[in-house]
Amino acid sequence: MPVYEYKGIDAKGKNIVGVIDAENEKAGRLKLRRTGVFPTDIYLEGTRKGMALKGDVKGLSFLQKVKTAELAHMTRQLATLLGANIPLVDALGALQDQVENPLLKKAVSQIKDKVVEGRRLADAMKGFPKIFNDLYISMIQAGEASGALEQVLARLADFTEYQAKLKSKISSALMYPVIMAVMGMGLVSYLVISVVPKIASIFEDADAVLPLPTRILMAVSGFATHYWYFILLFLILFGYFFKRYARSPAGRARFDALSLKAPIFGELFRKIAISRFSRTLATLLRSGVQLLGALDIVKNVVNNVILTDAIDRTKNSVKEGESIAEPLRRSGQFPPMVTHMIAVGEKTGGLEAMLEKVADSFDGEVDTTVGKLTTLLEPLMIMVMGGVVVSIVLAILLPILKMSDL
Image (cartoon, rainbow, N blue to C red):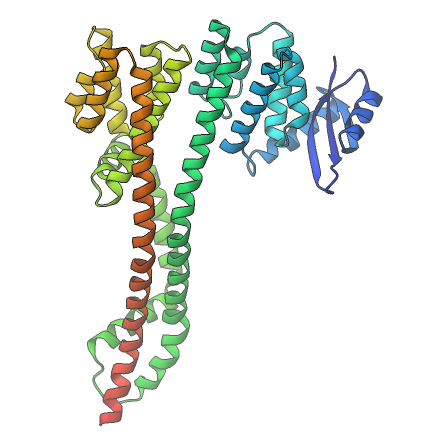
């Protein structure tokens, strides 16, 4: 069935773009109207105007990405459709009409076309690495090979939803300190650039030696007022070279090592990484992925070079016939409780269940640590901001008090 690309307006009055399969252009317009979309333009995919629409969708990719929550919702819908004994092609067609994100809608449409041509679902998804990562595709491959695609999709939806909740939880916890820091920097910049120069003019005619804090503040204010472009240029160059160094292998290894040793935050980063490692490995093994392949995938999930090297060495040791727990213990990056529980799971044949218990345990610790950090950071930010503002005010008031005494 031909595939058409369209531009239209939905029931809420928003402009949308997407793709739809229909027998002809007229049938496509009718199909869109039934779904609550009023099409303004509709073209056969691959035509000249259709290619222009492709450019619009591609242009949106800079502003809009497929969020983890959207991918989890799509996965859950696909699992539900397959659970209702709907054929895969029909399920993808129904899913295409339900997905709202234009990038994801485009991907689902092209995946359905490839499945119709006879390709496997996992192979069709490989063409969209920015949406479906190696973990996702490996689990789909295992589900197709074992004939349990519906169960694997449901498990994958659970895992993706958990990742979205964890990311949202950490973002929410850091939102308040970030807002406070931005507001504090804005307030201090306003005082230094706008307020201090006006007050400094009062002291210029005074024949008195100003206190050291006042002289330092006036010097900083004068430099920031007259040479702000140097400060801006320095910050831009510093940010550029810092980012470049942080992305290099040596810089990434150094920063990842420091992040694990950082006070307060280091343990939090380690707990999050171990939770991801345990839950991802358990999910892959339950879905039928072989242990070596699962370790090869899971090493990229922890998002830390130090832990990735430890997992990579573990994979090599497993190739030589060793257990998982022992090389993880030798690395020194995993707490003894984790390696002990993994060793027990290997001996009893319940490795997947034990890994899930490890993940649940560390999830609880992450929640507790994030709550404590949030409670600690709020008063700490207020104290720091208050200290900076009080220092500026005192630097201004000291010469005034001195002049009034004279």
